[in-house]
Length: 91
Image (cartoon, rainbow, N blue to C red):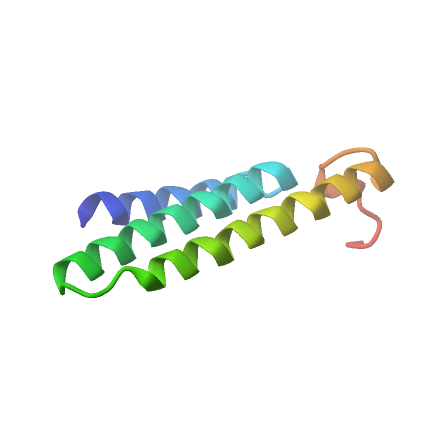
């Protein structure tokens, strides 16, 4: 359980450090989702639950990752990069 806590903290720390690059922020979010999946797996294994919910969670997290990458590609095509300083929408 300590390893999953370290994974979650490392993901949040990298998310806050690399807030200027959209791609690195998306990778940090996927790492947080992976640590959350690991936590849920350990919880369901500990209490002897069914693992069906984990398949639903993985499906939703894959859809979330694909949506993030598609938004990243469209922003790179329109603005020319993934730096947050390039986006005039946020100013």
